[in-house]
Length: 159
Ligand SMILES: [Cu+2]
Image 1 (tube, protein in one colour):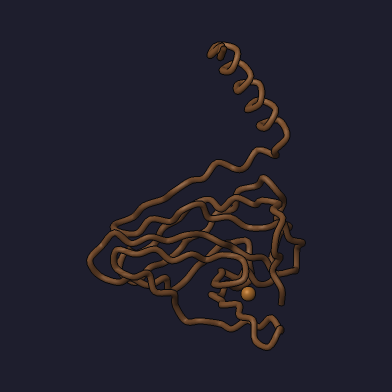
Image 2: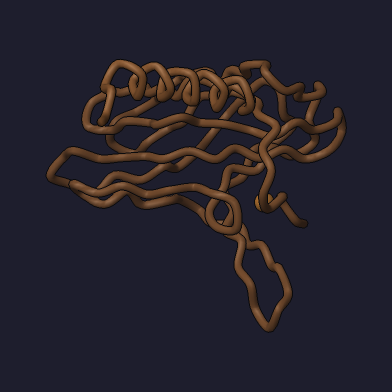
């Protein structure tokens, strides 16, 4: 015979254990201006003088395409938009002038693909910090938000 109360308690205990075993992820956040929403921009820890990276998702609920044309932060000497590719087993990276966000669509900047490159960091980026960044769109204009620095496993950023 099933005893629902005991099952429920066991589930609560299992969930509590699972929560303790996992590092707490940074809370996802969004920032919207006009038709453009930036979803959970994040970066990785990096040393002063080195390059850093920003990943995020951008969605466009408008009826026209928009383009990410520039990114700026006081923390980097220069910021570029990049695309990583794999050709013949070799990681390559190229600079792109802009990143199109299609009407009604979403574009993901993620490890192994499109990313924002922070060149010549003026400060060290430490896990759990939030850094100020402005994303400039052709139509929506500027969106300023905090980018969370996170230590994540998985593919690193190769240059
Ligand atoms: Cu890059």
